[in-house]
Structures are given as structure tokens and as C-alpha cells.
Amino acid sequence: MDLMHPELTLDDVRSIPARLRDRVRHDVIGRDDIIELVLIALFADGHVLLEDYPGSGKTTLAKALGHGFAEAAQGAPEAIPSFRRVQFTPDLLPSDVTGVTLFDPNNATFTFRRGPVFASVLLVDEINRTSPKVQSALLEAMAEKQVTVDNVSHRLDELFFVIATQNPLDSVGTYPLPLAQLDRFLFKLSMKHIDPASELKVLQTWGHPRQAAELPQVQREEVLAARAAVRRQVAVSGAIEQCLVDVAQGLRDPRRTRQGVSTRCLVQAVPALQMRAVLHGRDFVSSEDLEALSQPLFRHRLELMPGVQGEALVQDALRAPIERLSRGTLGAA
Image (cartoon, rainbow, N blue to C red; front, top):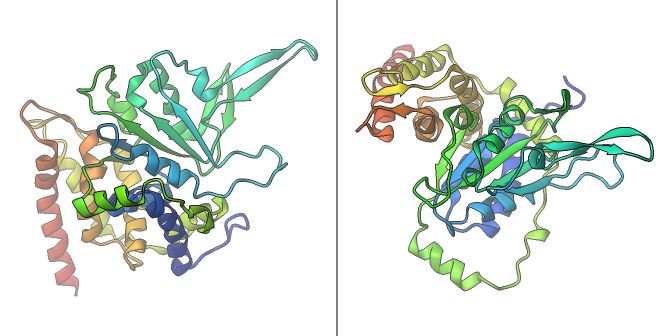
């Protein structure tokens, strides 16, 4: 057992996202399905892209999640803040995100000043309002949890979680994210309008004193320990793995896609499926998990032929593999 990440039971694991969920629900009303998916991504060591028009609560959700983490003890060596935010604008530079090397004339030495990526949770607001050059500055950070500045690599926090927001591509002044960037996001989520009852509650509670500070926070070490426990204790059968591969093959149909899902996508999908199983009271991944996560997992990674709808393609690719998986499960019972 890793002494840095002591073994937790799955009941222990469930209590950690429950605390985060309570804090986020306090500030974000009517978004329980989105909150669950964001928590799955966090505990699966993925990243999330939230898309919708301004005023839908994207930034509020991200800030509520970030403030759910307890700050490192004051004075701790190399303490990394629990939450940082960077607003992407057209004049932003890559060094504004990753950090910059500065020369100290008093000591005649170079010192690296860390950028906002050095945080446990990073909110990247309006990621598609800056140039592709700056967008690409996040590629290494999201994939390898490090940044390279002046040929020197600097490690990021082991927890490092990006939650990015973007406006739809028909908005003025937006730059589309390349597929290489989109593939780094475990989920892409659209925040539709909340239901009328929740919208009314938002109006009724707006401006009133809020007591989120009284809700318990989560330590970064708890999340790391939970990630390790889920990997070891939630079973993923060979049939589920085969089902994932079969779905990927269906999403690479040359008649309907210019580019299908990557192998990286399948690797990232496994811990997400495991975490969803835990949140729904199981210690094994089932077809239910794959069906529930298929759209946010796959749809944004596809480059489609003209006239093809991504949601319909994912549904079609999922149908036959899920049927084979169900028949195999019944035969083994």
C-alpha cells in the first residue's frame, strides 16, 4: 500500500465526492446531472470542457468546485494553491498561463515564476477567446502534468484538474479548439437551460446571505487516495473492454467520420466508468455506465462528414456492442 495514498474503502471514496457535491449544489441550482459528470471527471483524473452561452452558470460551477478544496497549510514548502483562474483573452501570451523565467540582477540568477497552471484546480474561462498559440500552451500541462519553459520542465500538482468554459463557436470573437486540444478533455458538457422551478429558486435566493463556508471542504490528498482506491477496487471485465473497442470501431466509420476517437479516449474512459460505478453503489463497471457516459465521452472527439449528427452516430455505434454485451452477461448468469 502506498503510504502517501492510504487505501480507502469504496464507502470512504463515496463520502469524498459527496462533500464536494454538497458545496457545489449550494451555489449551482438545477445542475445535478452536470455536477455528477464533473465529479466523475475529477476523480477519473480527466478534464472537463463546459460549453453554452454566457449566463448559464459555467463559471459559477467551476468556482464552486475549486473553492471546495482546502488550501495548503500556510508556509508549506512549494505549496500549490487549491484553485486558480485565468481569463483567456485575445492578447494573452503562453507565458501568462505556464509561467516565465525572470532574471534577478541582484543575484545574477534566473528564477522561474509559476503561472496559474500551478494549482490543484484550474478554471480556464472562455478558452476559445484566445489564439491557438495560447490554447496549445495547455496541451503539455493537461496530458503530462508538466510545463516546459526555456527547455526546463516543471512538474504540476498531481491532482491538476482543468475545468474550461467556452462560448459556442457562432459567438463573436471565438477560435475553434483543434481536435488535439479537444482530445485532452475527458468530457465536453453542454449546460442547457435549467428547469423553471430551479430558475425560480435562483431568483428567490439571489442576494441572500450564503453559508457555503460552513460545509466541509476536501483535502487534495483525499482525492488522490480515492483515485487510487477506485483503480484497484472497481472491476472492469474483459467484456466491457471489448465493448469499448467495438464502439470505437463504429465511431471510425469512414462513411460518416473524417476522424474517429483515439486510443487515448478509450484509456481515459476506463477510470471514468469505474468512478460512475462507485457513485451508483457498485464495485464493477456495467453497460449502464457506458451508456450513461457515451455522449460526453465521445461526441466532441469526432470530426464528422457533412450532414452527420454526432449524437446519432454515437447512439448507432453503441447499439450493437451493448446488445452483444447484454447477451454475454445473460449467458454467463
